[in-house]
Image 1: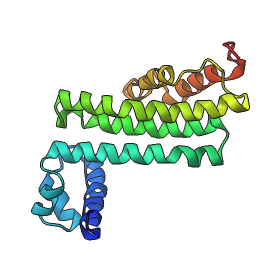
Image 2: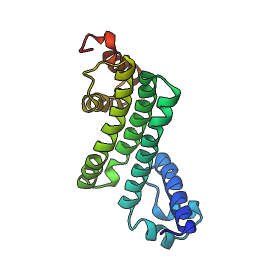
Image 3: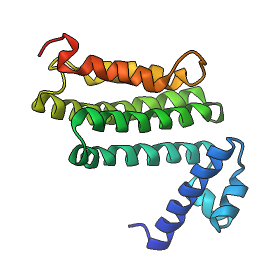
Image 4: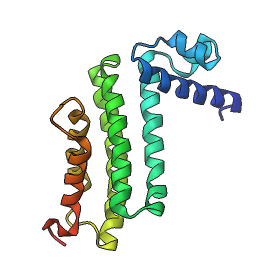
Amino acid sequence: MVRSDARENRDRLLAVARLAFEESGLASLNQIAQRAGVGPGTLYRHFPNREALILAVYQDELDRLLEEVPELLAEYPPIEALRRWTTRLVAAMRRKHGLGDAISQATHQAAAAESYGPVVAAIARILEAGKADGSIRLDANPADFLMLTGSLWRAFDNTDADPARMLDLILDGLGVSGGGAH
């Protein structure tokens, strides 16, 4: 079992690292340790290298996103829950892409493969809620949706593209009036 002070240090390091990496993907581990109020040894006990810290930040963000699904479904209709969740997912994908140079291609691919199943399961949960209430087409597929939304984070770099409009088009295609199987 992890001691509470060790867990608190790890959580604080992740929070500080997330902010530091958002400010600059070049933030040093020593800067992060200092900002978190711990020594470098404490940081390295939790995260043996920069890549491990970056992956932990990704995983922490993914875990938070996955935990939001039930809350969003309780508060919003399925299409709106999907819109809000996808917007957050795309923002996380952009941040992950921005730090892509800081981790090896093999590690990046492994992280993507590891996150694929949980992300598809979260999308499936939202889609199933929409199918159950009649607001989402019965043939809507979570893997297809994820593939389509993968284009959204790339749209931010294209001045002719509008990610919000693109998401609206994708979500409109999921609706029962979209002409697919009902």
